[in-house]
Length: 458
Image 1: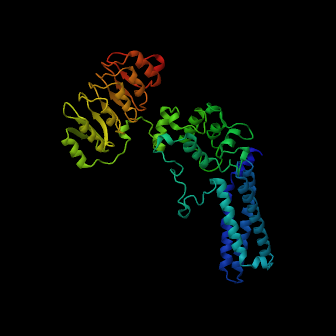
Image 2: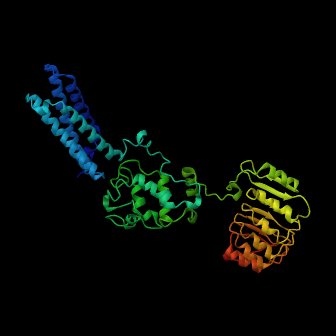
Image 3: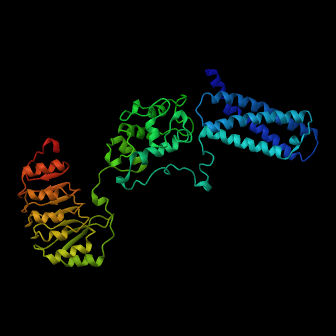
């Protein structure tokens, strides 16, 4: 078809409302005449059917031209096209019959106006699907669930470890913007996007994405074309937003993996900002004390701790975590045992220079939310450090002035959250720390002097 055909075709949305109005007016007058043979009524009704038939014919013609220049749902297009032609044909038949005074059962039936009104409704609905996308009419109807709000497609992002990039961020966009045309039920261009195999296979024109190269991928190119380009996607409905396109580009550049978790991905700063603003996903590392949620400690237990020689402070008003320090000079096993009454709440513990021995560390190893532990200048050995291996949330450990050696480093390597450890005046050697940092390059190990980690450990 020529561009002039497209020019004419785009008048379809303008013209198509005219026959709807004329036919509905004729139908209403059919109901209102109540059997009267008044010539004025009959003339008005015939005029309504005539003008409706003329404009319906024009609308069908320009609509046919428009359909040849767009990408539409095949089933809806077929039905809309032939229902529209059917409406024009019926309009001409009814006008001819009434102008010739052909009082046939069909023309006089009370169901004929109802049938025409129903046909107009169905045809108009199909046209709305073509223009705005399927489900447009009932999208926000309360009796079908209140529509598809912006956050309906979002997953629960409270747990960063559980977020899979494709499943939770990319597929919901495809589902909303692409599946109507590219699914197992409607594979336009041979492309199926509602399963991973179809995406990998591509469409009639080959693969739709090149892993690692977003701007060589049709998936990205089609959604960034000018909207008046016939290849622009999606052809109908709401286009992808700027944020959705940027997110899809990043996913393709990351390798277009279907099972990769967000925490395994390299997320550039612009995408981090996008995820925070659009999804509430904050990738900024936070201290564990900001993420641990515990119940408040029993006030009677806190009083018991204070009376037993501890200074107890609340770490923040926004949580129930505690900072605990022994006020005396020497602590015994029974006093240490009282810490277990608040084991979930204690997160900072200061027992420096308290004559803590290896056996006592077995109690400390039972404080699951401990994040900062000071044990400096205590008679602690490698055997005692083994009791601390289960402290999964420990971030800072001070072992300055203790009796540990390189043998304790195996236990320290098992603490997954550890960020800083102090080894001043201990038996730990620079060689031992160098080996430790090969396994934990993110760890800050302080030996009390400038220590340059090897290149592969930095």
